[in-house]
Amino acid sequence: MQNYKELKVWAKAHSFTLKVYEVTKLFPREELYSLTNQLRRAASSVPANIAEGCGKNSQADFANYLNIALGSANEAEYYLILSKDLGYISVANFEPLIKSVNEIKAMLISFITKIRKA
Image (cartoon, rainbow, N blue to C red; front, side, top):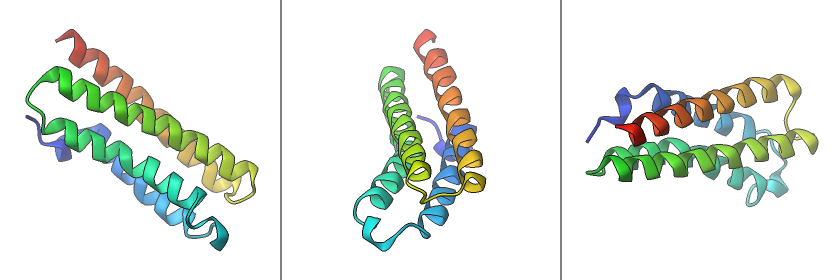
């Protein structure tokens, strides 16, 4: 069992989630229960699954939760693209978020690979 708060990937995912919440405050009101909610849930699912995986007893279980976090990161990436294409998010806000989610995905892939080899 690990302390998730000590993991760099969790810290980066948490920071990403906070930024997503900030940016989505500007989304149209009619999107509150659809795209805004979906993007926030996908983003927050990444650090949440990392945290949950840290509480598991086996490395295989931990790797599985990291894999779920990776799926959520991919989902968040798509919702960011959709938000930009719909004009809900500016390029200035989009680019750092996409960069961040791709860094998180790379970190998760590396971490999953490391854990599965151990």
